[in-house]
Image (tube, rainbow, N blue to C red; front, side, top):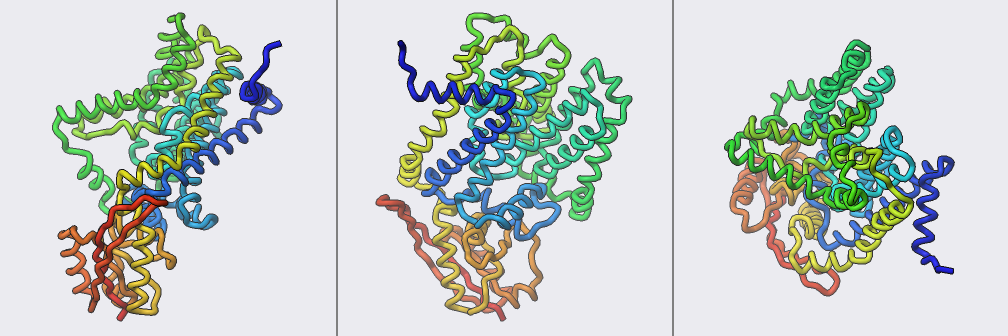
Length: 503
């Protein structure tokens, strides 16, 4: 009698639990919880030589000055504010928050695919998405892009249900979630436009637009967005000016090249699921055309809802002179399992499900085993100083501050990435000044501030000196900081710290 390996027995048991109607919901939640823990552990270890990315510490800064908008909309910062009311501000807890984003998206995909796929195909669909770097490696850097992963998934799910049922509840939920997407990042306009386009080209559009559903969606969406819209009007639509300054007004040829790069890069990110499905389909070519544009009406509508938000940016960007990047497609893949797996001619065997589950399980386990080596390799390559040395710099800033005054540290300015890193790690939870509304001169004189620059950043040093002169007497400290990791020496950096004590 042939022996079964322990791993094979576990995969068979896992597959059985995930397709059993009585156990599958609980089993999927447990599987996603394990997925979240494994990747959180990987991030905590692998990135232990790097420190928190400036995108993450910037959101900590925003969360301490919560408003209805910044250079991006406020939702990502609001979630950080809420999260750190419950958890300590530590690297591990921040990576846990980050990994909850793709885990929640995968759960939504699991629920959504029940409308299109059978048991084995549902399991395979979720497992395939775990092979996409957006759902693990990139998701570990929590920012306004990763927040969109579950938001786009939830909005797509609610909209598809609303379109099919025309129920008021689903319509209202779709509107609220659509507004939440816009409060995450304005890039979400492509999701909303894409879903609207999918509805307009569908043959059932008359029934949908004659029902209350779309108007409920629009009304609820605007109601949820209203406070942010008021904030935008009062602040001269400043986030749009930021977006234009950074990404717009590019030559047509450059925009076309970036749009092609966006498409090619996006395809590259999902190469693993595509290859796996092509292998399963081989040599039968019949499902391939049915994947891209199905003949059956319900599946074709889902395909339109997939393609439109993904492709619209590549069409519009060259026409408007905007440059785009494939990383921004990370929230576009909710319906990929439906596209790839719903063709009736594509069969998914039990052995296929077990093998793909094995791949999905092996990836985080292998990366967790490799995580110490990743941390060491990053240390030897020289991590970003503003992130890797931020904790030590924060201690140095607090020590220098309290050598000058017993008062708590309230404000940190200077170079943006340095200020954000300091406030994220400083024990007294000060506020950052760069990129945020500035306190008046009287407040700064009363509370004092610290300004931090790299010593070789002449422009930052000039700005710091001018700001300190306006506020009051100051003292300057030069700090040489090196962060070693295990037995591996780090690269030293010199910092200028300007202390302006309270008056």
